[in-house]
Image (cartoon, rainbow, N blue to C red; front, side, top):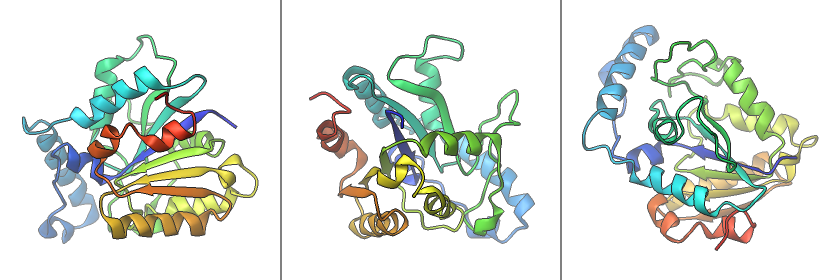
Length: 241
């Protein structure tokens, strides 16, 4: 078992930063191979828009840096194609620089791929579309490393993510497969989503996939939850008051 909190961010985080682009219907009508370049160009363009405000991300990182109680650390995952979170972490902690104690990894695991272009993208997960079937997900070094890490964890936070599309449901299939042997089978999941119905649906999916786990929900926007000082993490001793 590790003392890392596993954070899973969905589209709600991007929308909160002003990145609200969705794949248009005319793009969805194209062959899959033609959709991906359109997605890359559009998401990168909107990420560069001056209206993008990553205050929520920087606030989160500042709070975790100031109030994470030893020996707890944090690891980040996302199903978003954008790399707003990775960009902010890299800005604060450039590659090769000192990694703070509270940060388990400076790498953000993109489970559905990313539009970020690196010198070497060989270890990255391929881009998956919302319309892809569940079996479209293939193994990658990135996803394997992420899975190997979080099965040992007991505290998870899910922000703005509903696991509605088929490729995201892969996670539940993977969790069910190992829940009896690994610590995550008795983990606690904190779900933050301002949409009450989506929140309830996510809690139901988690309770069904992991019957030995416990869950708690906050029907709040992410910024409002930050304003409340993330009380569930305080109660578990992850954060100081």
